[in-house]
Image 1: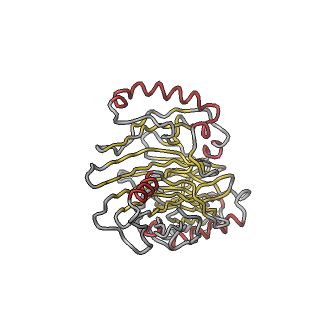
Image 2 (image 1 turned 90 degrees about the vertical axis):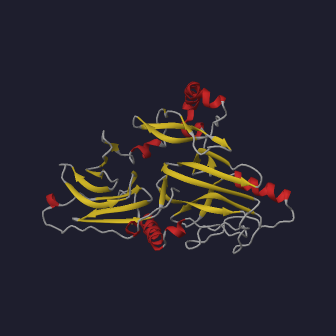
Image 3 (image 1 turned 180 degrees about the horizontal axis):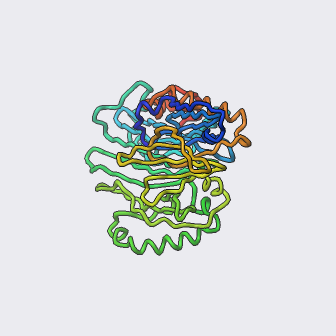
Length: 380
């Protein structure tokens, strides 16, 4: 997920209430939705003149109408003389509570296997043990999740490696996870028959980056891309990875390449806002009402509801930036889904930022969380 830096107030249940009135024309519009913003998700309900806003540090994805929580776990593969921590992404079904791995970084596990072969006298550490203060090798992966787009979620992965007698080595790349299969998505998975055209346009764009490629600062990786929007539709944003002992901490971004909207984009399109020319306001239109988020010069975001006559009712302050909305229409938001979402918000509100990203026990058992739903799902 994105780096957690939550203000305590965000973790609380926020409630803004409007006095009920017998004049329906003066009431805020009936509405229910979930807004993803910054490091949190906000559940808004407007019924019978009363607006409630509830926030929790949780990342959600919706696939075929079903909600899933996405979270990142440290995979500790350390030995006594090797400090090795990778990253694993889990997808948890809110209705069943089942967690499954959908992504694991490959560099740190490979370093752990290599170290074990080269140092058979060393051993994997137990859960409560720490590696030497000055280990022979240290490697740490940092993975940031982007906003889920239908069945796909983009990520950025940075890895730092330090060895005795060698310069520090770094690498950074992007990628997209197919949440349905738990595999890295290809351009063909995302764009279907548009993939060949996207790759041709990418190759033309590489001509402008030939100096960086020639000097070895970056290299072409067909899987190093993220999902973006272009002219209101889907786009592929390639990022040429960097790797080496110098300042290999960034990716070289190419211009996003738009493509014809595939079937999975239909649901995504309705979740995205229209942005004002000065980027100070975002508006989501749905049914007979709109959701408006305004940003001030300090970066604070305030949300309001707007009816069909352009009257607005304040909802409250949210994290910044707001990215997308899940509409909770009564026809599709059944009792079981409501209970699952309520339980997820209750659980997320009960733990703090220090337990959002849990560590994997050094014994090798992957735990979904040290506090919530501890479901062992596999071993290294």
